[in-house]
Image (cartoon, rainbow, N blue to C red; front, side, top):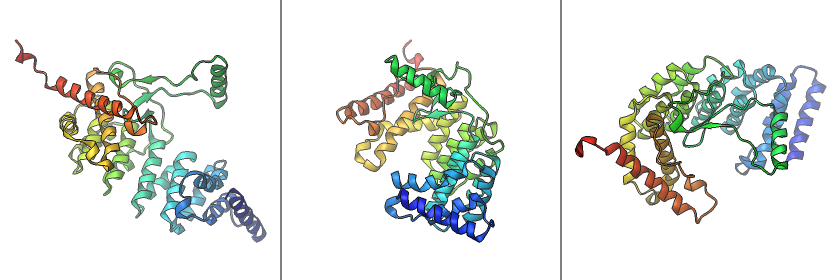
Length: 337
């Protein structure tokens, strides 16, 4: 596959050179990428990596690259290719021109292309770095790649764990200073607010991630607005994201979700089970942000554990956390004079 990709790239470069200098280098690279066959069994993994490696030549000339992609995209009929090109724009060409092209893709007829455009804009607009279902906040790592590699090698020589970036636990966010940084591109929040009205639930949720990461007051207003979304799932995400701003506007929605999750047996619906435990993690972390309390660290998501013997204990721990929070919220100090 890699050899075929290289041959196609060489063929395009040679033919373009013979025809004159009408095409830019970026246009030749995009043309080479579009010539690589795309089949159902080559959408992921190594095949995808080899295919998008063709685009790596665009990184050196970002403005020229965006111009070439903007000219090519209207003729790209396969949405899978439009998804990959939108991913390239957000991941490797993080400029104002790239953002402008991604904003146009927010109106793509394919919902998965729109999802990727939203996700790519999130990378350009974010001011905070949060990971996992708990949305744990990470301090930025401003070391150069060389410094990171030296630190990793030293740790290996010293037989100690490789140093990781410092995190802020959800329960400590009320007292710890905010960890923020400048976005790659300013001024994208209005476009994300528009995307929050997407007809597809998954796209609205993706937009909520992006809005929460911007740390922008306008984003907070839209998160509050989403508490009235027709989707129960969207409402819960909005409520939980608001806690990252120490905003309890969605507490009623969160308490409703707490009772619903306690009544639900996730094993009765295998398609829902993975989402179920993700919601538990997100909800528990959100309660910790608002209250500064913790009933123990959130366990690993059972669906991510490679130890099958560990899974029942992880599931029980999630249930125990839900019960502990339900008991805490229900406690009435006047009931025991």
